[in-house]
Amino acid sequence: MRALLTRIRDSIFRVGWPEDDRKALLAMRSSIILHLHAPKVRPASLRFKATWALGFVSLVLTLSLVMTGIYLMFYYIPHPDAAWRSMKDLAFVVPFGVVTRNLHRWGAHAMVALVTLHMLRVFLSGGYKAPREANWVAGVGLWVLTLALSFTGYLLPWDQLAYWAVTVGSHMVASVPLIGKPTALLLLGDRSVGEAALLRFYVLHCVVLPCVLGGLVAFHIYRVRRDGGLVTSEHAPPEEPRLVPAWPHLVYRELVVTLIVVAVLLAVSFAFNAPLEPLADPGRTPNPAKAPWYFLGIQELAHYSAFWGGVFVPGAFVAGLCLLPYVDRGEAGIGRYWPPERMFACTAFVAIGLFFLVVTIIGTFFRGPAWALMWWPY
Amino acid sequence: MATRSRRSVLRLFGEAGFGVLALQAVWSTVRFARAPVSYAPPMRRSLGEPGEYAAGTAVYVEDAGVFVLRDANGLRALSATCTHLGCTVRKNAGGDGFTCPCHGSRYDTEGNVIAGPAPASLSFLSLRVDKRGRLEVDLAAEVDAKQRCKVA
Image (cartoon, rainbow over all chains, first blue to last red; front, side, top):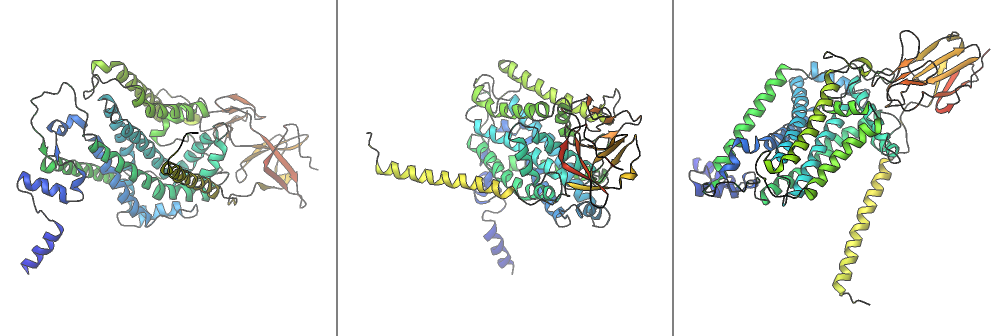
């Protein structure tokens, strides 16, 4: 009996628990999950300061969002007559329904913040330069996808905030000259936000965008490995110790980070409930009508001009991000944060980031009813 | 004429084949997504009896998203949809015009922009009395601000 169990175990785990480096390398090669890592890594890349684990935490959050999203799909009905009621079911009837929704909501918020910080970290260390240009563009794509997933997910509760945030968003799309109106019509499937729009956003949110995200994440992570991991500074000491096996040095760190992320997410989700406003009412706009915080910067800009602030400035920013690695090709200073050689680039990037942060803070805290400027936090 | 190898010509055909395939996939996806069916509420909405609206008032009809304005010369329907980003404007407490709750666009009593990001005035919509003597607004038909629906 014992022998049978051992045979079954050995047929699945060919190497067993690795006790030495040789076995660790074999284990890395034979396991489908472990083989995504390079078998050996640089000790410098393992330091917390090298990545602040931002990319990995984004990956953990993505997996958590996929899982909690699938749970939510068992109760959610994408129709205006039923969507808001199913949110109430989750809140009052379904065991752990509240926590599942909270995990999904707060995980999504954390994801937007962390993917943004990850981009900032990569920029400051010059990680977008050759040979990593395409991977930087893929990363920009992942950032846009994260925002698109947030935006499409935002409509699904079908409360007042959802309805009006998406009404405002679709009018921003429609404000683009020539192609705006047909694009908004494609997105909403009708002339106003209604059952067609809800179903479209649902399918985009649960199927289309996650599939695109999965493909891009695979490309992104594979390229990180193919391009030799993190960028290294030319000032790195030559006596740097030899490579260490990814098991246990990298894998253990990942497991610890996973544990911390899930613990924090659970704690936040037990402590704070995701808001749900009254049922969507197409005849009455709430005052003020605010999008989720990460879109309030764009809403603040759109308050000056729908097209220039709401579409052109964000669009130009994303286009600039994509072009950046093909224009800024200097090799000096890469692998270090904010080095003197890249003073202008880093200062400019942080300045742009601060600009968006400031308009986001104004939009979030200092705009009251009718978007009037308040001198105290609203 | 430059000679091409048979292989390079066949490869060109193959590439063109995939190109055509990709184009038709994009085109048919867009066509597929442009549903010719609308499930939205109809554009023509009944606003009830003309007698419900007293002279000198601007009454909001939530089902249609319009203000019904009545003066000595007749009735008019003013769209409540803000021309900036589509929120529904509200009547000011003082009755001196309309304000959008989303980004603070302000309009006077005739729907002209006074302040804020709105690029255009609120539009007046076609209003008529149907066979049963009820008011009917057509949300798709804009009319001139001077045009009034005369009622007895």
